[in-house]
Image (cartoon, rainbow, N blue to C red; front, side):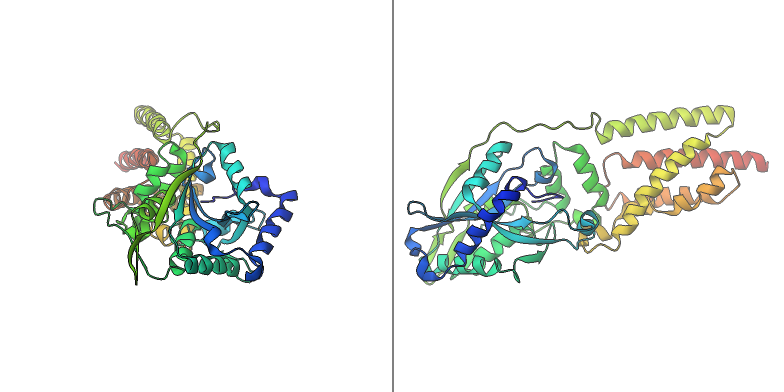
Length: 398
């Protein structure tokens, strides 16, 4: 799973010629290639490492000619050009194009060994005809007019593309074992993969909407490499000759190593929220006692809430279905930015009444959607300010 950068950065520059050589070999005439008896085709499942873009793992397909010096490559549907104009914005709005690339397998191994990330290889139990069909399908996908596809994190990513092309080339039906005790939501699965990266988890929860809290079926769960690995292990192929396992052998292609550690922000979102609430309560008590508001604190809370709201507003136009309807926008929306000037000038406005209404709706929405960890603290701080200002207005009226 590639987020914002290509995992194969080490293959740029001088290695581009090697990549082109791999692709040219696959596109060669059948007469130039070995018989299918000497070919293994495998699903490669790569465990996450500590780089943010790898938190969800990765999936690739290995095509391996077993004869000495035979062609051996990893086919990866997670290639993109980070230098594409407005790449991050396009990614967020769901209009990012990814493509299929072929890489020398030894370099693929070296990359994951470098990061200390384990790679599991599942050798597929395919007939010669199915191997040939898959080889031709990969070659067809590598043609310039076919290699690019519209990427979607949950529905059309490097893992689902690998699964789909394998299934299409099988002369029968792949039957997956039911997992009746496993019905997580998309948010649950994202939480599992980001359990050691609280800020990544916070960012995901901030953007994911109510649809991400719906339970998923087995097909939807296979967007995660680990889930597809499990399902392939327990799958069978039903054809005219009966049943056969989808996977005939499982091996470790790259053993787990020492993970590369990167410096993280020292505080978690929850710790930051505790600090924010403590500061908000202290300021509220001081304001209540002195009957004097801290305009700078008001403005800081309004800018933070409005900036988050502006991002959530933009998500309404995203092509990612799971981010469009986000109940956190009930409180975090651009309204806060519109009232900055009246609040700074200390004019009596309806803004503080609006904050109370938005906070009430926001809390009701939390019954239906999981919010980002600690985000309620920011809403609470602004609500305390609204209560104080409403109190001041009330006393002045009397």
